[in-house]
Length: 470
Image (cartoon, rainbow, N blue to C red; front, side, top):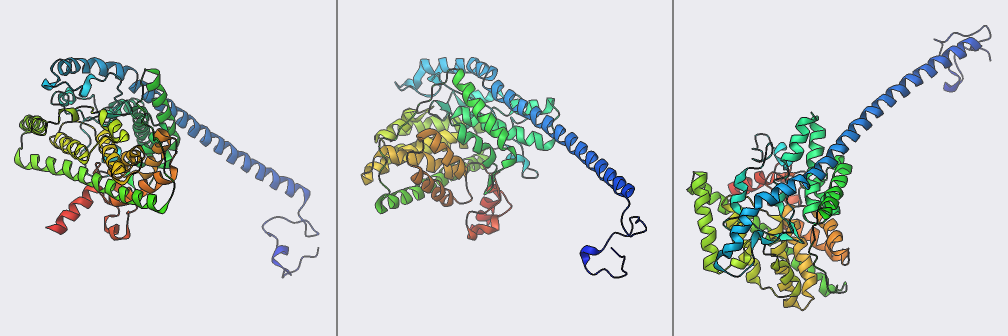
């Protein structure tokens, strides 16, 4: 090919920085040399990629091993230690029974407790971390047991208070392993998933709970594989330790008719509003104590007396402690509106007084009782609406719609999948930017009208709302 000053097309343009032979073509040696350079460059890139992938794989394997250790350890030695530390309180309350014949609180031997560190404090500058986030659980956690402050359990599991005690294990392991910030974050989320999967017998829900509970409108998929492994490991470990989960079944699922859908939607709105009332009640009681009594020891004493007085005046001793009967009664249609209301009041008084307890299990009990009552009221199988009540109040209280859908599969095998999704998202929207976890960061506001809350936390949204009212 003749070499022209002006190529006829771009394809004919050659890189003139390369030496050409007398005929205007590359020489064979030049082609071989260029090929060798390209091969050498490819080999270097491949070697660099291999080393980088090997390092990443090693780091992932290390973190995965730590996740398994956390999941096994928390429900192994920690469970045994917990049973020993809880035994004196069990004996004391078993002997006294508060002067009544009800089996309450810690007498139920089939229990799981696990600690967790809510990583939400990492999301808000200046936010005080959980007092048990970086050390051993304080003995004062046991003080909640004496005044019947233990809040309850569902399906044979403890509530969220168990997860709050699990954080020292993943946190300490993270420190010992000198994990980097992102690995520490993933391990903490995995610890949450492990706790939830084992505590509630819901491994699928547990996997998503760790990824979803820190944010509103976002799922942290970067920790997905670790949360999944942790949740199932915690669940199977809990089973191996002898946990027997108390399952409530849906007797019958109504057809997807306009009337049924309308009832489910209205019920979901009620469940969302109930969760808001729950969160508001706890927050209000806590605020009142904080303003009136500055000394936390005096506040604890007064709070305990108020809780006991409430039980006495309402004759509500059967609502104390675990109150495992509440969910079962809701599924059987043997609850009233008063059952849900009383449980909400005594729980708010207990948590608001500063006693460490759970939020999740009371939400289950309140939701089941409320749903069962609505079912009887509208002529639909109470077990169906009790199940929806459990899910709806839980979803709105914790702002976790995907976790709620997964829990429906875990607990009820997806027998009413369409209704589960409706309740999850309607209650989630009804709950607004409220909830039991004030450190949750709002990534995607639930409604356009709430866009002003974007980027802040639930606590920020509540404070802004209070400022507008004032």
